Length: 337
Image (tube, rainbow, N blue to C red; front, top):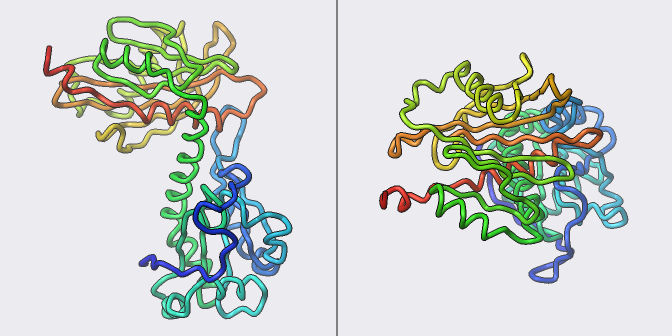
């Protein structure tokens, strides 16, 4: 299904005069008719309210119903993440609202089945993403929601990452630490204020921050072929690394997922799950990226995790993850060797 641009005919702000957006980006306010909501609620929660275990079950995103009649009164129009969803054949206020913010041309593409989902940034507030989901009827609207669920979720992820990244670096960067890393090891991450180098070894570096305890470690090893990075091998490698330098930390059996993503421009194996340390009676969530830079003949294993009893851990883990995703390699460093 193609995603068509749309024309917003309503505007509660423009240019530099837009107000600041409100609320966490991870909370999506969904404007829908109360009758439609009975049909839409389960699909929306199924798509967006994914759960990670930290070890408590935590929803990555939250869906909250809103009434279009209170768009301004409840400041829905200033929310960071706002979704409007309604079929075009309905006569209720939400459907009328959708028709007012979509051009006749775009409405026709929806009626013809050529579109059904779109989004736009900074419509009524800064750092806001507005999502619109529609269809010729409620059944088609639900179908469009499911068909485009991956792109909707990916767009939400990117929007939330952008918002959180700005917050992570809002107090500045430890550029001295970043420079030290690149000059000493040939790789670096953007180190936010509050982090410090906790430990260094010839092929292992740990960055950390307190309150709550969180870390980012980078391990590297030469002469590892990309074909070695099987699921079992990567899980065992993390246990070996953390067992050696983190006093016996290990992955909780059965509490890890394995997938592949692009990381630092390379195809990486990602582990995500729970770690434990039986000797210290500790544990918590972690995420690891393992990839081989073929040009350097070097395995990089980047790991993040935290120990934060009695705290929501998913938002903190995302913040550390964004630091990890700033990882880059300075190839000039290796060319000079």
